[in-house]
Image (cartoon, rainbow over all chains, first blue to last red; front, side, top):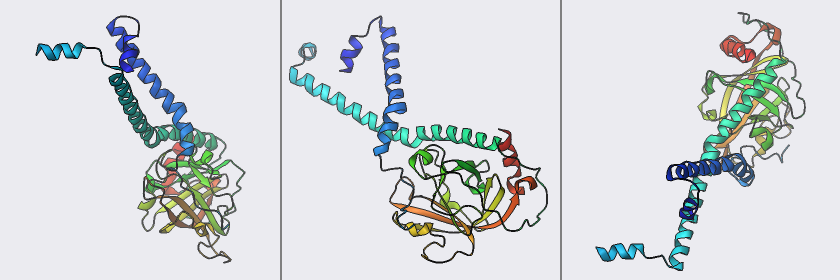
Length: 55
Length: 247
C-alpha cells in the first residue's frame, strides 16, 4: 500500500520524499486535531468527577 | 546466489500481496494507537494550558485588586462568593502545585469545563465563604493535569482562591482515597448526611492512582481567613497575583 503510494507520487525522488513526509505530517495533524478529540468522548480514561447521587 | 537474486525479482503472488497489505494496515493501526496515547497524555495538555491561560487573563481583566498590604489584619467572616452559572468565578493559587500555579475555576463539572478550562465547581455544593462544602474537580492527568500533585499536600499548606469578592485562604486538613461512587464526600459535612455544617471547607477531587480512573483522591481544606480585594492578596502569593493580573 505505502510502496504503491510512493511509486505513484509525481516528480523526482527528492520531491517524492518531501511529498511523502508532508502526507505523514498531514495525517498526524488530522488525527490530533479532529479524529482524537472526537474519539475521546468514548474514552473512559479521563473521568475525574465523583458520583452525585447523594446530593 | 544468483538463484536468490532471481527469486527476489519475481513478482509476488496475490496471496503474498494481500498478506503484505494486511501487515501494513496492522502496523498503521498500532502507530495510530500510540499516537492516540501521545495525544491524550501530551497534546491535550498543550491545548488545555493555552485555554486556561486565556481564561485566567480574561477573568483577571475584570478584577480590581488593591496593593499588597503588609499586615495580618483580621477581616472577619468571609462573604459568600457569587457563582454565576457556567461561568469562571475565581482563580486558584496553590503553591504546593508549583510557584506559578494560577488556574481558573468555573461552575460545572461537565467534560466541557474539565477538558478545557481545568477546575470545575460541583454546582450542587456550596460557595466559598458559605457554611458547608465548596467542592471542585479537575483532571489528575491529561487536559492540563491541573491536580497532578494533589497527593503531595503537607501540614500547613495553603490553598488560595481569588474571586471578585477577595481572597479566601484555605488550609489543607486531610486527604482520603474513595471509590468513584462515594458522592458523600460532597455533602456539606462529608460522610455525614443530614449534619449541619459549622465550618466552610474546600473539597478537591481527582483521579487515583495516576493514569487510571479506578479510584478518587479527595483533599479537604478549611477556610481559615479572608481578605477583601482592596486589601490586596496574602503575602505568600502577592508576586504571583501581581503577575497574573498584569497578563
